[in-house]
Image (cartoon, rainbow, N blue to C red; front, side, top):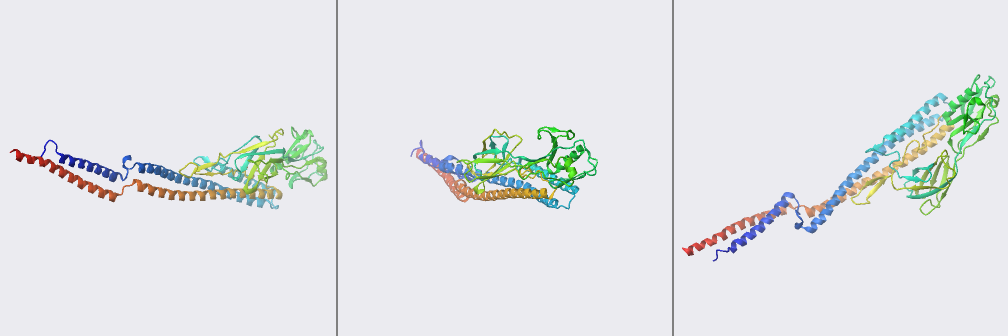
Length: 475
């Protein structure tokens, strides 16, 4: 027997160290709940689980993003719902105004409410926002750039692809005018000359004793209600003159287009002659004229356009629609070709997935009173009110289409959210199988190692007692 080297004790100590190491690992797994507590436990499993954890966190964030997108849509929908209600009231008023039993004072009240309702639509547009981002003023819509400042797009449907679109405005829209002939600028209306001055079926009474200046100032005040300017001019409108100067008086519509007109009817021939109406010159309005250029990345050969005043509507198959406004006041006739570049920028992007490119783009066009073309509705005659009804119906259709699109967006986001939840659940289950400790199994292993530890301690004690037997040989 040897006493310098106790190999039995060394062997027991070695096993004890290994068991203690296993106990330490088992205790780390039990206390942390993780099967992998350091890379040495499972290098491949750690790499896989790290990628899974990143994906799970991305999916969870994307789920929250989808909910944010739904909240944005619901905020916009709330504003659009109120606009719809306002439009319904405007239509009701327009139908009321189309009834000729109303007096001018009655129509004044209707016109005042119509104007206030148009302002309310703009107020709703201005205040409907999410996280300080306005939703209904066109801020959340695709941008476009025009090579000519006086030609701008007011609406681009989602079916219009990004790219360059070329058109030419060959003739500008014009307003309707009526220019009087010779007038007795210093005259005063006599009893025999008094009568009714009717413009587009809107009546202004001319009474005895009114001077020519008073007559035209009264016409000026009343006819502005139906969008007609009244002014004296010697050069056709470039420079205004005083009514008392004897210069021809011009009646001119504010709006452009072939539907615009100035029809003057006077029930007294003497008043007609006094005001120079009988030998006046009438010009009807005109729509602008344009041409569109087909190209591989621009308008197709099947694209067509219609013009209404200074507005051009270009339509094509599959829902393609583009509205373009031409400003006749600033348009330079030297500009022949206009290039409109439709961009992808401007829409609100909702990140709906954990990976790049998994997104949904929200496109919400402007619904201001101007973009809906209901900012200058007139209620003073049956004809004007009827046109207002048509304009409001078109606005209701536009708002309904936008609301329908938002509903489709919301349905998509709900489906995306449900899909993300399923993906997150599946990945979490797989991650758990790699990373999570099986507590029952690990507790069994811990108990086994603990028993082995106690056995190793006992064996080390026994192995250290064996050299003591040599004392008996030395006695």
